[in-house]
Image 1 (spheres, rainbow, N blue to C red):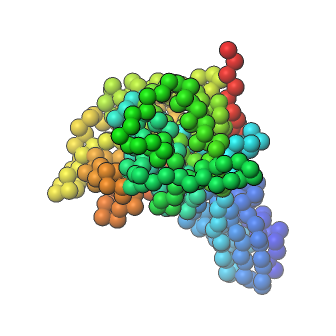
Image 2 (tube, rainbow, N blue to C red):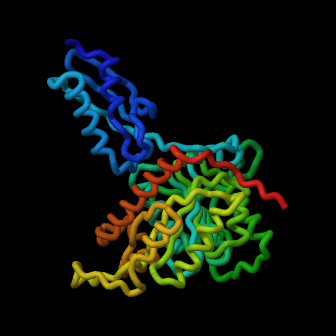
Image 3 (cartoon, helix red, strand yellow):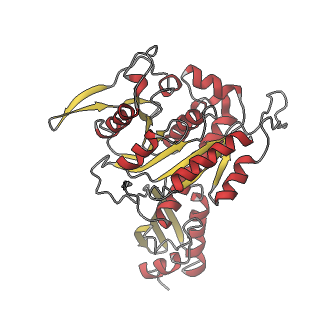
Length: 367
């Protein structure tokens, strides 16, 4: 019996994406089917280059052809990817950006900026195009963490409009108020000026085509947060906390802010930083200095994904201070792998969000 395109499609309609819970054919993830005798090749278009289920889907496709079409078939599955998006704003602002992700926390000192930087780099290392905005106007730290202190963004004319060009480092694009003012100069601005600065980072900067734009928010729930959701369609938020109750109490407020009407920004997940301490000389030991399981409990309380734990490691701090973040420091391979896996989990949950939630839009506040 000869192999036909129809039989291949029918077989692949039995392969279910484990995250989206629909078959590959219904999801339009199968293309370029080529049949030559008993040789079958086709492309599976994943929803993210960081898909952790890639091997599982590949093997399921091969098994479907062998069991439902021809057990002697030579099957070649080309795994490709295209990051999904669910924007519903017409693309007037940041037209080339597929997903805008806010990284927030209820309080300072939980390592939010460290997570934002390493998360952006992890997504880039996994094959995505990524931008990073330091929206912590009063305490910008990303220039230090990326080793770009003292650099200044260029400005070029784009259709008669002066547009800032983000600084590129380690494969990501970034912009921070720390790149525009002297590092010894305090930013003593009232709320409207701070909001205006964030809007300029979004509207007056040429970001180009990006799969993900990460926004590192300041601690708390204030002007910057409201300005962000009123300016751009935020795909979702990642909340960073530490295990102790005082941090969890403030993280609840951050979660609550994104959940209230009319903001309604989906929570991509919760990351627990400083989860435990493991000495280099005792790699099997974990010391839960700040308590245990706080992030998981918070995720369960709000019924949102728990994305993972980050330990207390000296190399993470040293990387942030020296401008060489942990995710690209191969001397800290264990920590680098933790962040790379976090990047995959974030990308995976963004794809799930885009498949199951309503389209993103700019929030309209009614007074």
